[in-house]
Every structure is written in C-alpha cells, then in structure tokens.
Image (tube, rainbow, N blue to C red; front, side):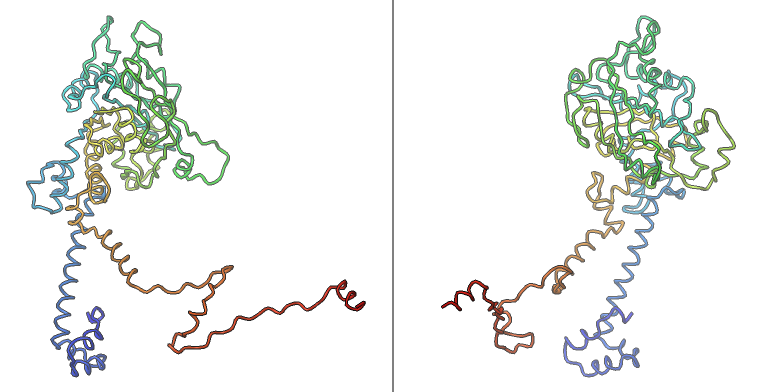
Length: 499
C-alpha cells in the first residue's frame, strides 16, 4: 500500500513534524510506526477506499462487458433479452441493460423464420409493422431486399463456391411478398406486379446467369422468361480490391480478383424520378441516376458475426451444402467447437445505410436477413425492418447478436445509439483517461529536442548567450571572421610589377 503514498509530500510540505520526518528517513526499518502516524493513516484510508471502488467498477465492467459477447449467456440474461422489458429489473444492472438493448432492437427490428409457402409469407408481411409503411409517389419507397448469397452456403471454400439454390425458393419469396404488400392478381390469376411505391433490390451474388431466374417472378406465365411489364435497372456494385485481398488473405498469385457484383432493381414504374427523387449517394460517389455504386469496402471477417460450427449447422439446417449436393464428408472436416463466420458473403452495414438514404427508404422487408447487417443499418437509421431467417435457431441467435451489438454501440461515443448512462455504468473511462493524459502532458515542461540527422542546431542570439544556465553573466563571444583570400590574380600582379 505504501507505494501509493507520496511520503516526501506528507512529511515535508505540511506542518513541521520532526517525528514523522524521522520515521520517513527510517521507513525501511519501521513501517509499522509509519502507518500509525495520523497524517499517513488518513492518506492510507483514502487510498484503500479508492482501490476498493476501482475494483468494484472493474467487476461491473467485466460483468456487463461479458454480456456483449456472442457466447451463450446465462438463463437470466437470456430471459432479459426475450422479455425486452427493463422495468422488470434493478436499474443499471446487467439484466436491466440487456433488456433495455433488446427493447431498442425490437422496437424497429422484427425477425421471423422463413415461411415454407407463398401464402404463409404473404400473411406474415401483411401482419408486420412494416406493412403500415406506404411509399409516396416521387417521394419515398418501401425497400424489399433479397441476397442470393444469404440463402445457402458451401461448406468447403465458401467464399469462392456458390452452391445451387433450393428449388423454387426465389419464386416463393418474391411472389409471396407481393400479395402481402397489397399487389393485385393479373388476368392469369398471378401476382407478378409490385405495388406502386415498392422497390425490389435483388443481389445476384456474382451469378449473372441467374438474372432470368430472378426476373421470372415478375413475368406473366404467357411471356418468355426475362420479359416483364415492370421497370428493371441493373446496378453495378464495385468492391474494394484491397478489402477483398484482406478477406481472402491473398498475398501473391496471379489469379484475378472479381470486384463486380450486380443488383437488379425492379419497380412498377421507372425508379427515378417516377418512384423516388434523384439523390446523391452518402457513402459513395454519384447519384441514384447512375448505374454504378462503389467502391464498397468489405469488412474483415475477423469482426464478423461468428459461431461454433455446431451452432452454424443449426442456423442453416439443410441450406449448408457442399458444391452442388449435400456432402456429409465435407461437414466432418469442421470441428463442432471451432469458431467461424456465420455468413462469409454479405454486404456491409454502410452499404445499406447508403441504400436507405439514396433510395428514400421508409421501411425495409429483408427476404434474406443473413448476419443482420441490413438490420443494423435500419436500427441506426430508425427504419422499421422485417427480416426472414433460415430457421428458428437463426432467429434466436441473430436477436442475441443484434442485442450485443446494440450494447457495444451504446457504449461507443459518437454512435446514434450511444447512452451516457450505460457508458458510465460500464465504467467506460476512455475519454477521461485521454483527457487526463493530455492534461498531464501539458503540465510537464517540454524537453529540448535533439537535432535529428541532417538538421542544424538553431543559432542563439548574442542576448541569449549573455547568461549561462548557472545565472552567471558572461561576455558575449565575438563572431569569428572568415579569413579573406589574399591571393591576387596573375593579371593584377603583372600590372603592379610594371608600375
């Protein structure tokens, strides 16, 4: 404890105490006597109280911080996430903040397992909170998202291999969403025309050969595949090469890196200006009139949502495949307790933030929720969001992941979800520590910097050199004069000799 006590300050800056000074001088031999001195004892008590308080704050930070990980929480914490009612818990406790974050998430975000029929999907969308949102002509729209990469994944080389999609899944998701939004049947008793104010964004996952499959849902049965009465635009998404290299850990090699991905946009009338107004991209260059969006920086997989492989199998169920068929041998190569990204191929949160603003989105229906990046963007921007998950396990784990992410955002100053009370409860002293370091640095006298190589030491003036560091005045040194060259040119010497 004595290392926290400034003994010299206690003994020599207060009231003169010769006994205390004697104890300080002999402190190596009489520690017990030193602790009995009133002045020292008071200081020691304050230090003990400060250490106990600091220890309690660290324990609270560890307890609340542990809740922000994706590890399985205890039953009480899991119940707090399901309940999403902070009023049931002690204020500023661990369960209180988990319930608070869950309440924030569920205010805007609703997750549901993917229905297996078109009628089931239509009923789900019709009863959702997003269905209250209606797009106004030339002002805003409801965005409906579908990413083929998030419908299934390959066990082996998931970043390079694209497995075959389950039969009929694209038709079921797209045609099931239209009646839920109030679309009308055509003369052939089919739903194939989006309602005015809805905008479909279909990401092909670098599979341009599936564009016809994607557009079949919008084509009447009497027309050829790819021919539709809707307005169709193709956006080219260009991904950052540097971020792709980091993802694939490519250091050497001559294999080409595919940076382009397509996103089909389907609307009942032309996108700009009939459906939404012209707007500039917030995260990228250009406007929504152009057909290019980029460069899109793909986040590192180390920071992506990760799960043990055993839980990942429960999330995907029969959608985790190898190549074109299910391969049990490929699954056996993964250890059940090994962590890996839950989804390898997904678009980042910033991409969706840009999409919601540029495309004037007032509500989002995500037919492929995946790792929840589109849901995070909706939560930050306070847009109602409905996301379809692969399984019930996917719903449970994704809710937990979003709550933990919301907790981390609540403790990050500058985030739209930042909560000063939560940051104070957790003991987030990052800003205070930085200010303390700056203040301490400002109080310290600046040391004279040594001249680096190639730099000349600055010259002192004569006035500065009159007085030395010891306070004694000295005579200023006279500046040395350069010796002039006394040589005379040969022509001048000749002229002198002639004279």
